[in-house]
Length: 610
Image 1 (cartoon, one colour):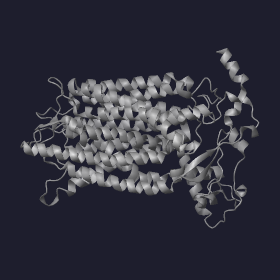
Image 2 (cartoon, one colour):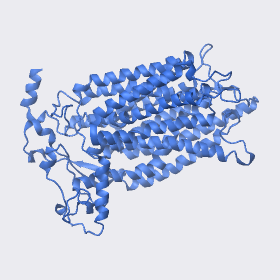
Image 3 (tube, helix red, strand yellow):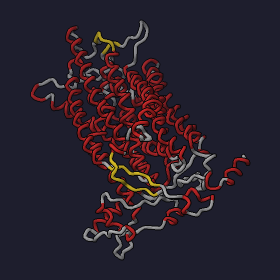
Image 4 (tube, helix red, strand yellow):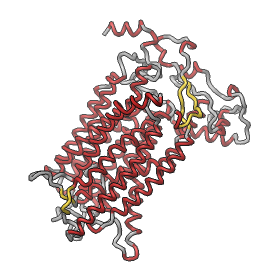
């Protein structure tokens, strides 16, 4: 150990990280002793167990709500969507707290305790007989099934929403912490970082695979108490795994409230609306490079985009932070603002619709499976929620093929380190989303045709058609997620400024959250409108007389419109490109060499050419 330490000091600044990362006590860290994949192994290990815990609840939740709490199809699907929406929206709060106050590590640790508390309460709610309504013969909500009491529902949903609060602090910070383990100033680590999000999602899908097979089978065959107890134990293990890796982690110091800094820029620019911006950027307000280095911050050069915000950095004699901002602060705000079209046009249209499809794959797709022949051999019936296993398997295969085969081959022609740009990757996934809904529509039409041919219109009738008729839509969903979800996460992280990485990551979870709420809205509106004027409606508790095929075709049309809007947004989006300063221009001592700032600027390089 002493030899390594001496080597680190002997090599001077070459062995210290240069991206501003420190240890938990705020001291500079040696590259050879911290970070990289050895630190990420604990973070990735956490994610495997945590996703097993989360999807142990989420994947089969619609079945529990209908079979145990006796809710109807639309009500249960909407309750799942609303909860999922809350899970994915809360990271906005967690990211704000991490960036502004506690840092990613401590925000994550505190949130993990809240998360674990919610899981324990949920396990209690499904285990204690008095906290569940009495069983009914068919296990599906109808006039003969007693509904859960307000107390029973209150405890169950309280536990679910405590979990949502906990994930709000863990989700935006754990993936960002993982990416922080790679120093962008070191070429080899920069290459590793390009693959990080692919393997990060691989760990997610690995945990999901275990959950969607073993855990769901336990819930279906053994019982909900054991089936929820296992994910709770898995979450406890995941937190322990994370804590074990603490000595190896690199940390980015909190740099103040990113939302406040952005608001200061907008307010200052508006208050100086009539002020002329000087042509020479040197006349704008900015701190010295050395000042940023001392504060472990990166300075950003002025860019030509969103030039009206430059008024915030124009000197007028007033020095209030709400009247005068630095160029770096303005550029950080520009970078976050430029992503808003992706968070609106591509969120409300481009990422929101795919997120809606993700939610529906854990609600309506699974409800379809309950009506089909689930036999696999003479003695084994497949639990409907296990269908998501196939989605996960195709995700795992797609990630490996993409990272180890597709990227190296395409990189030779495009010269892009990622093979293709992030928005190109997202676009491929959006095309696959159209195919998913068309495939789901065709499968549902075949299911309804077989039901009519066999005169099976009862809500509990099993249609003589194998459950594997749904396999193609789940397989396509897995492949699409390899493109859409990973590209979204990496895009929002990569394009966010250094001091706002957690907030940038929360943009990704926000798209999933709003997608969940949109699923609730669409399902409720479609169910209501299609039942007017005496019509049966498209989405009923009895799927054998519903018209889910029409609903899926409606979603396919929305997905097509979604893709067309994406093309417009991707065409005009301008990436942020890093330009690293020559390190020899700064004379720093070895212990502070990690403070060398990165100067970043925007270029007119668009998606097709980046």
